[in-house]
Length: 109
Ligand SMILES: [Zn+2]
Image 1: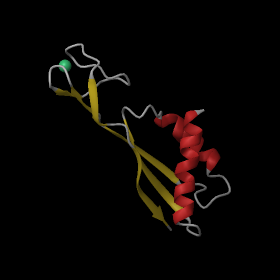
Image 2: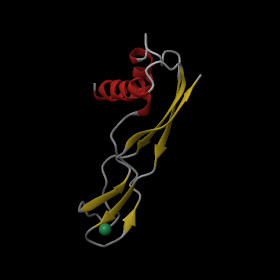
Image 3: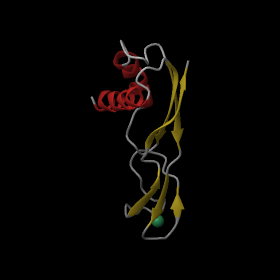
Image 4: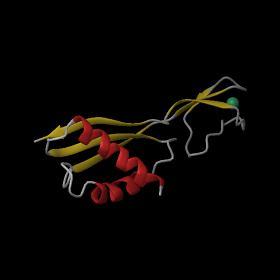
């Protein structure tokens, strides 16, 4: 399961930086084209945080909008699905935004 590994790395990154902190809330930003399913991350979060400083912490996930540039017609567009295809029908696109997954903030007690 893809999301389990991602959640583990998020939790590891937080505990590494804040080894003794009691974490209350973690905010994540997940790009629409990252292929990461927010609900799966939420599900994994409770499992992964058990026994760590993040146990019981709230997880807030925001979805970051995606933006692509078409190399054929030159237009920028916001893809509506995980597979980006320009409205002109071209798959020749460059992803400008939407593939990132980042921790935007961590709230500690
Ligand atoms: Zn196009």
